[in-house]
Image 1: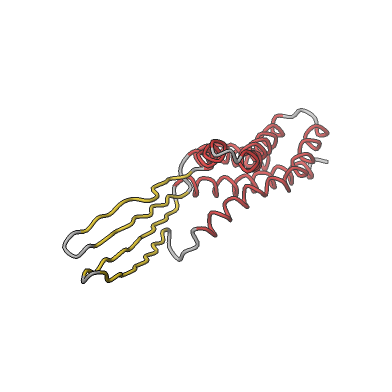
Image 2: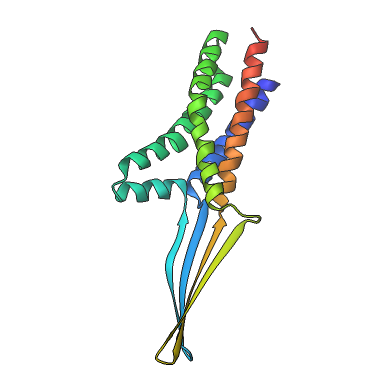
Length: 187
């Protein structure tokens, strides 16, 4: 029974993995407003929704290839490999093959903690008491009997990709532990 539950959790984790890396993890919008007495202007300075894959793509096109490669390897390749291998354990015919796969997954499991680290960074960036945060700044200048007010507002919010990726991480870890405990029980 544990084997079936472990597979189900890993398949569910895998199903959440793809939206987790493709859907926006967070959005960021910064707007500048200028008030010139009777008239006002505003402009969006930043308006982005970033997913893990969009971030990798943007970093790659900005020639930050090492950072893009690290995020891709630790947040996409290793977690995908780990979850796939744990799912393959379900279909392995011999106990030694299953055990070898589980041992390999445990070795790379330390590296796959980087995917959790990526989520932790997003949480730190967005650290708030709620799912979104707003920051406002205001500056007033008085020149030639005219008051000019500059203000900016930054709004950041967590996206669906964040929740999918967190759910992937938790289900993947749980599925791995259940499959591992099943393998140790059949020895």
